Image 1 (cartoon, rainbow, N blue to C red):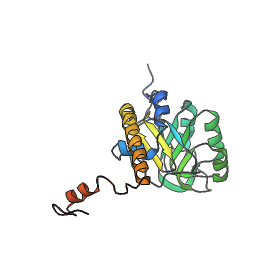
Image 2 (image 1 turned 135 degrees about the vertical axis):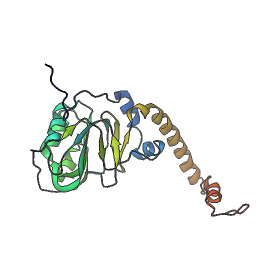
Image 3 (image 1 turned 180 degrees about the vertical axis):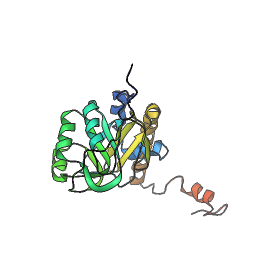
Image 4 (image 1 turned 60 degrees about the vertical axis):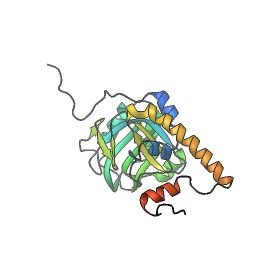
Length: 230
């Protein structure tokens, strides 16, 4: 009789294509968040351990009970090179869920980075070795390894809904997650937005200081009467 489907570990996921990851990684998380309708961003408590850290790749999703990292060890074991492990740690920062040993393992396995809505530790080492780690905080207390979690199922991490294989982009501004099927069109929109912003910054430096959309927005909001100008 065949084994029942594992309700804790899903090894079979569809990942965002590596070429799309490379294209999307050229853009700031902020640009991608804007063209995605300002959705998919993780709460601002999720920050890189070092300001220079950047990450991009398909999501390996993990759900854990606060203070327990057993399921993260599973994710480290089944993740493929280029994956980003994204952990729903419930925002708990009473115990660190990873530190230097686990990030060393992740880097050696070719994993692109780890994002945790929870605490990490060994921040000095993590900052120096450069492996991208984003977390909600720091705590020297270590985790337990005894509570069942789930790997590669839909999760909600720091306010963002994430499916396994979705595209994760992180930098100094924070983290945005893009639905896998929407990435090609969002990349096109991101390039157009970037081109516009480059042009707008150049115009400001040339003396065109006022945003071209401002007066229309003020009239629409009722801050200026008909015929009135700023």
